[in-house]
Length: 579
Image 1: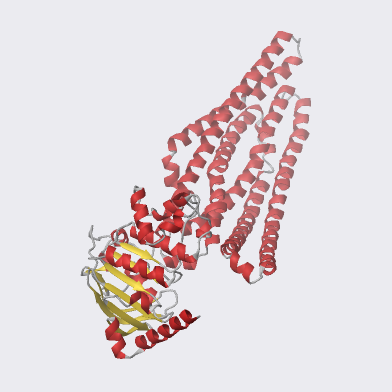
Image 2: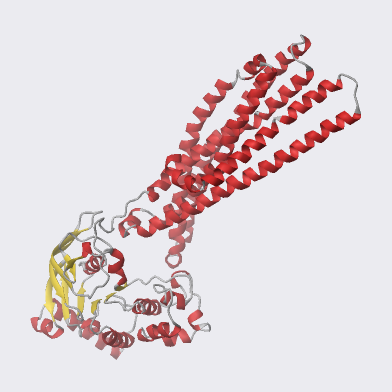
């Protein structure tokens, strides 16, 4: 575990060394008081002078103050470092998550990821803070105190160490059980987090289907499992400390028995026995702390393994090591014998796609649900990697274009528009750090959402609820369009992004887009023929293949699937107008 954390520890090695020095000083000072008390007790057997006792008492107080001061510096230094490393780990985990592909999030639930970022991270931080501090404290305290005990009586020290093997056995056996049971607790907590996250995200569906009681029962079941596994863990951990105390108690009993006889036989003085007993008592907490630290360590090992899954996860989609920098994309797109299946299920989605989109042209894609339209878009944006030499932009294999360059030149608007819990202004300006209000307003006007925004009391400063819950579906889609337009992309992709917008507003937006995107490439996916009939080229997809293609007029003349869909939609619109 510490091997993986070594780079983080090295970053703060100066502070850690300083903390270790403070700990050495505090422990070195702590062994002075028993020696002073030894002399004081032996002094009490002779003629007592109050001044001498005051000197002893003053020295004890001074030593205690110094001990407390250096112990404070120790805690302040090492615990602060653990918090700094926690911050670095959290940032690295988040950065790693940003680089993962869509497939990663399909394989792993949000709740499980959140549990690794919170509970598991906190367990690892405990190892780096209290864990490291008490481990070093136990080692140094045992070293200093054993040295002083041996100076007083090697025999008594040897007798005091009789319970040590039992201590080692308990730590080893119980520690492994703690590790396993704590890991079970963390896994179950991930399940609870996943359930809570999914329920809150879909709370409107839960309510509309009157499933509140069912969802509560399901959550209660997971929670009971969490309690059960926690109880299994607590039972082991609860027995740990009493067992440690029993072993320590046996050691103290041995010292009282044999130490008393050594005093009566004149082998050691009463003061030496008192000092020895004080030194032994100084080992009680480090002995208990050893068990506590082992518990923290085993928790940390279990949690670190869960965090390593994210920290060392290799992104499925990334640039090649020898990729050539490209700064600009014009926008011509071509597909050559493209066939594709999703790696997680092996189902063929696209078959032998051959298509070319010239820069400045509008391509429209229509077809039934599940025919591969959105998959085609996911390959253009490299949400998934296409096969080599199958997708080209500006005659360059898309695999050879740096990801950031590719995505910086594409404005992509999915059907399900995601909005952040922020102001409308910040949502529109999401991809641009420094953007003027005039540009934001322009983008909103082109998306035909400006007037709706101005009708809100706070206008562009209106704070949206989670995922834009306080907006209609059409409003969310139009804000998403404004967000894409503000980037001034060379390729604009609308994946059924006007499905919640009425036909009149849809036509206004499309007219605006045709004007804005002159000389740039557009790809529109829609179920409405009215939305795409002005495209330069239209393809009809079915079962992952292009079954028809041409202009709107050409496709109507073919009298195929496209013409049938157009005729059906015309009839539906006529009926709607009559109603």
